[in-house]
Image (cartoon, rainbow, N blue to C red):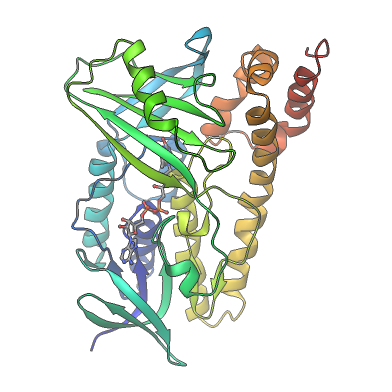
Length: 375
Ligand SMILES: Cc1cc2nc3c(=O)[nH]c(=O)nc-3n(C[C@H](O)[C@H](O)[C@H](O)COP(=O)(O)OP(=O)(O)OC[C@H]3O[C@@H](n4cnc5c(N)ncnc54)[C@H](O)[C@@H]3O)c2cc1C
């Protein structure tokens, strides 16, 4: 039986990034994915170009188009347009994920798709990973099985309750204008974001406050219809959001969690691709250090994620609480104002952290919630 230095469970962006970097660091790596690849991933596919720095190969062949303008709206009106200082990348997740898996294979990662992990067991030296295609042994294990995976629970780590999301994928259209839209007034406890693709749109909705998904489907369909978008070639897929909700340990015996298995998506915007990739990279580095004798490397991984991501997500969560509890006031008094409308693109581009703006933004939003005090 082959023994691997590391087995990565789940070939999403988090798992693929971890596997790529593990192999690059010279570790024998097995990546196990339950779906046949390429698999469909329900996701808006908007991502900051800053992710380029996490790879040593050119990502641009996998970018479907670039967006230079974003528009905020309230019930489709009261719009504000913002020119982006840095273009935002739009990816087709099928193509983008296939591009990453090709690089994993070239780097020497062994990929087993169509194979579900059904249980894990640590035998004092190795993880025994049971799958629908036999048992595999790995000295280290990475749980990258996403928001609905079982690895978090199997490793005895805390699993967050997922929030509902929905993707309406529309194809077969003329190329739309390269503009992204964030609509705040039509979906209770969440928002709707529309990302252009070369032949259509990906329209997404997410519930960030609470867990009720009843209005999601009708809200997205009504919104697209009112926008005059032809839905002849469209399909709807519900999925979950693994939003950050407090810091928790992300390491266990010879094992780490990455991506949405670790609930790292931004609780204000649902941005999850960038932090999943980043945690994948950090996990690979930590396991490499652990193999080289650093007995604290896995605990340090948890600390790094908390300090460099969790600390900022705490501010995102505070802003989300303000915005989603009084969205109309927050929109008029905060989001659409020039001082704040410029900030979100910079945060999505990874050029600004919530912590850098939180005091000012919270003052602004809080002020807007008290009639007469909005600036
Ligand atoms: C509606 C919606 C819109 C979104 N839009 C955006 C956006 O525009 N920009 C952005 O940055 N983020 C967005 N996100 C979030 C983003 O898609 C995720 O954060 C990111 O893709 C998570 O990556 P991951 O690698 O952690 O997990 P996943 O991509 O979920 O990958 C996990 C993989 O593990 C596999 N798996 C699960 N269980 C097993 C098992 N037992 N054995 C083997 N394999 C298993 C799954 O099949 C899956 O392929 C959106 C999410 C939703 C729901």
